[in-house]
Length: 324
Image 1: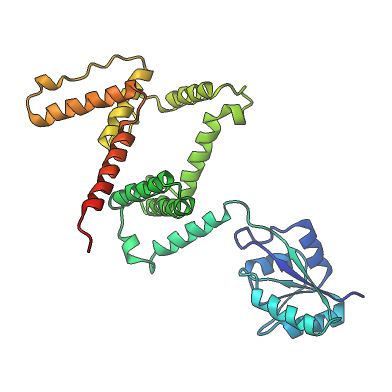
Image 2: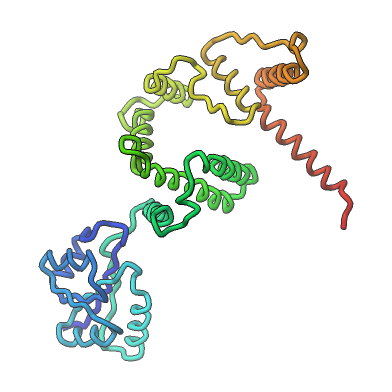
């Protein structure tokens, strides 16, 4: 009879009892030991397995069970019981022949599983007994932070700094999850959750990508974009080609998007003339709008152009400053 200890590790992010067929076979065929009661232990017992909870160090009880039964299973806790695995490994290395140790994964984290952790952490922070600052926030009070974090992610993209981008996208994700958690506190009939956010995104992506999900023949990138816009137009049922434009974006980008929308709709835009404006501010605005229109005609991005020149000027200012 071979002496074997099976360390059975499972994902704490999956429902209790969701195990592989091999894992179910091993827990049903051999004695199971574990360090504490849990939903997983309950599920395994309900499936007919014999589970014993061991207090304190489990190394010797495991070896005693191996001596009596040949093969024994250790049902690891949510943290994986790494300390026990190290202790047991050292003991078996010092005393070869006691038993062999086998690591078995009864379930794995699916892709995106850590998003569940993010939701759980933000729920704790925004719940009674959590972080008073987060509990005091509203969608409106957080609005500026969402813009700030988005701009920092944009800066990381422009800098080609993928490590910084990963971190900044995490900050953007924090804002998304926190907004969703706060929405759970809205009055009945108005509240929604992070699952509503994710579900709406999934439904939208499936609807707007029929060339992927509905067997529609995929054409050129231009045809795919046109199809996206056509489906979007049906979904939104908007009264104007300008509906849906983010009005709080920077003015140059806003002007560019408005002129782009009008051009795609085949509309002729009559620009205001700076010469007939009643004051300096409106004359300046008309001149800037004309500059945006000229940039579009030249296939240039005015927001990007002004940002580049401004940052170049900033570098020159820093270089000219007195050095300490």
